[in-house]
Image (cartoon, one colour):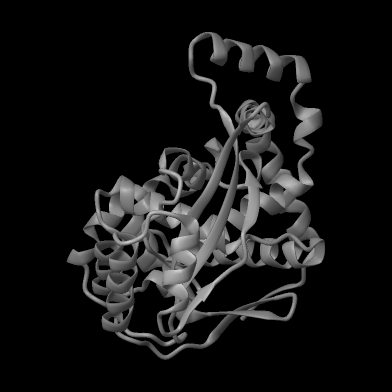
Length: 308
């Protein structure tokens, strides 16, 4: 989506430089703002300033960093109220896009983040926050009313005429997880990643992958599940569309360990819902930007914000 890409594009471009930044030493912290009983600390403010220097290569004031954090906290609270969540699969897909766009392997990206004073997990949390912001705002902004169906149909027809329309698939997949403890170090993560890569090179079917994985220690094999293009992220859809049947996606660091997805079946389907949804959000982009300011103003008006 154009809206989401605008949130994350600066990070994609600059993360390759992360290895050249030194880690920031720990600082004493104090509460600077309380938003609906949730605190924002001085440490969080300084970390936000450092993060933007890293991913956007720009400096902001304490005040600007504070206001950004207030907005994000308000969005988190609104998301909890509306039960809006972000799936791990979606976060991992975006993280893989970062590695690809910066021409780094997943392990190199993790190393660059660590040398920059952060971590793979911390950056995934940042991505999750951006995705949640977009979803919460979209839940408040009626995209279906912002764009006429006839405009979507016309744009879809134009893309298909120019050969730019995307095909849809239904996938049957199994997730395989090389389990890691929450506090696993980079060495342990790399070891499990190498084990996953070794397995990936030795299997050629979904059944073989499941059987092989069950013979390994601390490896979880999920039951087969079926997902359509419209139900998964664009990056994962591209990976599965180009993967041979029986193959596995490249290992990625997930919340529970190093994860791969085995492709059991792939079926072309007549479903343009994903493409139509994508066009809908693209056409609504400008209207969304204006409405975003109105929504944030409303959330702030309802909130109790105590500056210390």
